[in-house]
Length: 376
Image (cartoon, rainbow, N blue to C red; front, side, top):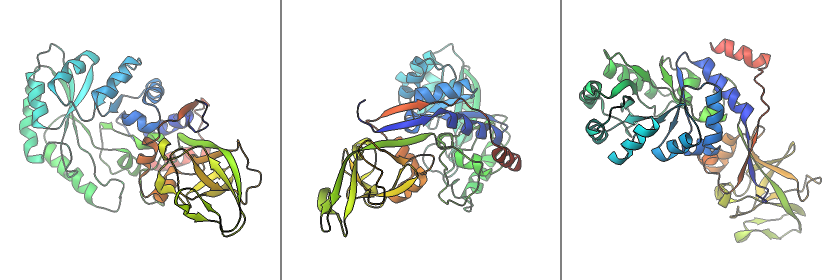
């Protein structure tokens, strides 16, 4: 693409984050790559994770899973929402997917399906998320039906935490207690931990963990001061200045004239906007980087462009690179300015090219090694 807006995807950072996950668990790892691997490119990310020996991958639906299989991915693929109609079961059989069952209708469809193939099945228990999953009092009857099914090879029991990113909140511990009570006496593998639970270590003792956001190098925690092993941002969102303007006092900028210059102001027009996934809520005062210099968005973000203040950065000109978020400007910070969550920002990138960069370095610094040892 000729337009300069792009997402630089640092594959060496992905490997680093996967290594962090490996060091934090004795269980197997399901890498969550739904929604195009949170905007990073599901096929490319899955290929790297597969080469690094990940135990399974997880997506939301069969369409996402088929894309991975047809790209040559052989690793086990978990369908986090199971299936939506009985017609999908033939695809699940053909491509060897692992469905997660979370409702009576899915169980009925699965038990009626005629097949000679043995499936791995996950069963989801609702311990307090109140979204998907069998309510605790309904779990056992469905579990026993699935357990007795001749075309079930292995069962994993799972739940999902609603507030694992709030370590001071007792809700996660209550969910863990509920899960253990409901599954007591069942000799199946279990999966509880998402990224936040894995990083904070709630002592869940999972057989399977499900990191997603942490693999992208983004912290799942709302509070900045929560310590966890160091992650490296995988996505760096950049573009370039395509025009420079000099404003006199009293002149306004962009739609609605929401910014009015109080002094002589030098501005730069950057080729990225809400049409690319950079939210309009970042209008006015959201930080950006030019080299090591920090400046801000001024005026309203438009569909294809935004405007930044260049008054104190005289070296910036047409063609100068601008970083919207990345290793030196955390997407968590940008999300706070946007009034949203980092998931929404990295997953919302569209209409821009991705450039995959791979330093192929697995070396860890002494500082990182020390933190791992402390964590373990």
